[in-house]
Length: 124
Image (tube, rainbow, N blue to C red; front, side):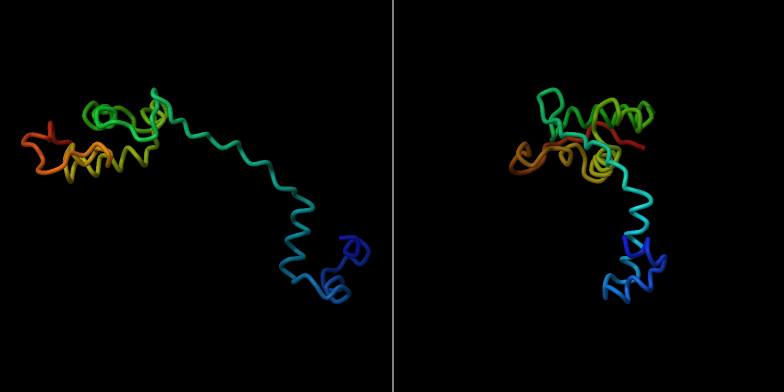
C-alpha cells in the first residue's frame, strides 16, 4: 500500500512487486478506504423448556392456527414466538399435505398406522 501511495498507480505497483492481481489490488484499496463494518451479533439458539429447538405438535399447531385460521400476521407471530417465518410456512405446507402427524418430531412419531381423525381442521 505504501508503494501505491508513492506511485499512485495500480499497474506500477503490480509491475514492481509482481503481485497481487489487479482485482486483488483494487480490493485492498477499497478495504483501506472503507474498512469492513463489524458484523451484528448472532442470535444464540435458545433451547430451553420455554422455547425448545424442536417444538411440540401442539406448539406448532397453535402457531399455525394463529397465522392461518385467525389471520394474525406471520411476521408478528414469528417475532413473538421466536420461530422463523420459514419454519411456520414449512409447518403449514406439511400440515396441508400430510396432516397433524407430519408436524410431529421424528422421535415423537407413533409407530404403525396413523389414527383416524388425526387431522383436526383444514387450512385455507
